[in-house]
Amino acid sequence: MIFNILIGFFWWNYEFLKGKTCMLISIINLKKLIMYTSKFYPLPLKTFEVLAANHDMHCVSIYLPLYKSGKEQNEHLAQETLKNCIKNVHKTLQEYQLSDAEIITYLKPIEKLIFNAELWRNSADGLAIFLDKNGLQYYALPIKFEAKTHVASSFYLTPLFPLFQDDEMYFLLELSQDYVKLYEASKYGLTNLHIKDLAPDTLEKAVGFDFKQKMLQFRSGKAAFNAGSFHGHGEGIDDEQKEIITFFRAIDKAVNKSIKNNKAPLVIASTNNVFNTYKQINTYPNLYGENCKGDPEFINKTKLHEVSFKLIKPYFSATKKQQLTKFQELYHTPKISYQLNEIIPAAISGKIETLFVEKDLDEFGVFNKENGKLTLGSEKEIQNSSLINLAAVQTFLNQGKVYVLNHDEMPVKGRLLNAVFRY
Image (cartoon, rainbow, N blue to C red; front, side, top):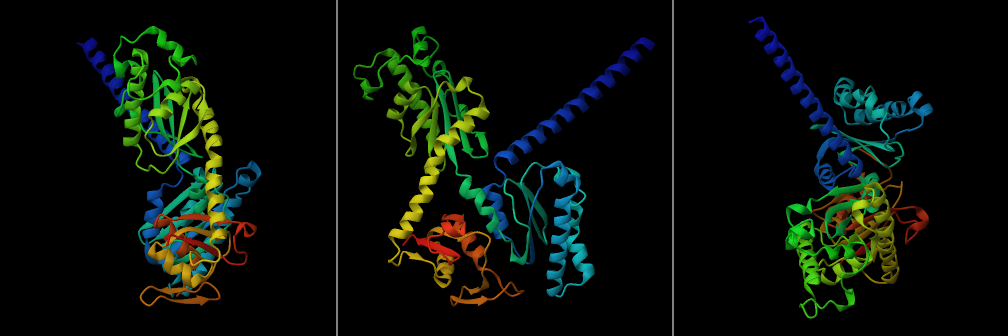
């Protein structure tokens, strides 16, 4: 009897501890997932859109640098910067006729961040903080912001645009006869799109398990067939060629189904023989002309990301250069502008294809959408807002491209906004 009781007691404790362990493991995995997502995609487009949609009387935006060195962290420089930012916001909110008690209550969620030790140990470069009547949102991001505060009827989002102009999206397809993975990629990392849910991830699954062993030479770099002999109709193609082509066509179909944005380039990680064959059956409209060479299954993912981004980076640099060249070519036509009274309504109506914004400068005023009248102000006041932020955000939300440039990069110097129009 006692023996049975003891057995029951130990079994209960075992199940209890096992459950607690599983719960702990689940929490750890969840944290890893959140960290992984935050690291690679520090501010998803959907989050930006939500922030841009917020309108309230007292939208508070704060940007400040984070410090990575031990000395700066020990001296709490970031926390001191935030304290100064809070003082600036407090002073601004007084102009809105809020009492000190109301302001202190409103800013309390930001005050609490000062004591968030984990936040200040973050390895990010900068911190963006947003507060309105719905609550507090903050993001540790890979941008070393200048300290800035802004209070208006909407959030100030212009400092975030380097995330989107530098975080150019592309897709990466790892491809061999028995290894297939598709990633959404950016300068921040890779996210698996799980193409195996839509297509076979090995040649065996595509054509059966009786394919010939000699096809292994294809993967090792010795072509099972010459890429130049491929016609796509079966003429002169032996069984091995047909099996590979069947496999690649299944992958191509899955790639097109998986990728919603068919404007982003697709990079292939594969041997040269695989790449030369795949690009002949590819139907994705923006296949990049060079591949990451080698068998992807045996390449470290961190290294593969580094190599793939280095490979595709000239593509994005060329896109920016093309837009700058386009501005100069259209300079004496109505398809460009550097006038605020033309650019603001064009941004709101979705007319702007590309907007160049001079970094760290601003212009304030009020734009009346009903009559199209633009009133400029000499400085930020309660009744006005940042016209630069308005133009940049509206251009971006209307699928235009926004580049934040240094003064010497701007097409027309001395003008804070330069725009190329769609029509």
